[in-house]
Image 1 (cartoon, rainbow, N blue to C red):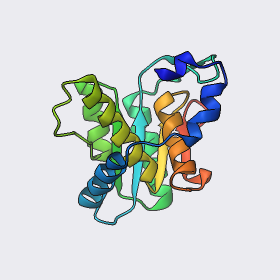
Image 2: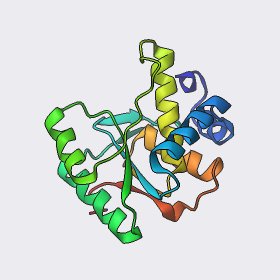
Image 3: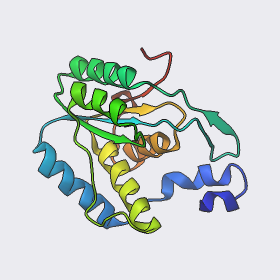
Image 4: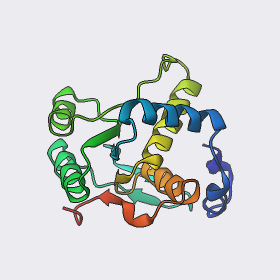
Length: 174
């Protein structure tokens, strides 16, 4: 991305000041209103990506979670806070694994109507998903994921949500 052209550390300094287009927030808010109708929800980001380049020039290794672990972590969080609704953002494509998560959480997913044909469509879908996750009452993300990192930044810097309402799945958060 454009962060690749900046000196290490500079992208990290600028990121809290960068916001999505207003329409992204509008689409996300309309989706949340329609699908959750004012009820509390947990947003879950489940990524199978093994690692990513950090904004400061290093790399971070993700701790991939199985479908069983994602469901277990999510259900525990939902039970702890009395939340019955879930939103899922994921890059998982394996039908059997997705079926396990769907059976346990019955999550809502965002599927854009734009068709996701162009790179711009795909990026916009990701931005809307980040905003939906950032608006959630509670968020459970994938450890060492750039998507999760962006959600956490949005929760804090755009929506002013308490850091205690978010967590990351890893081997220490069973």
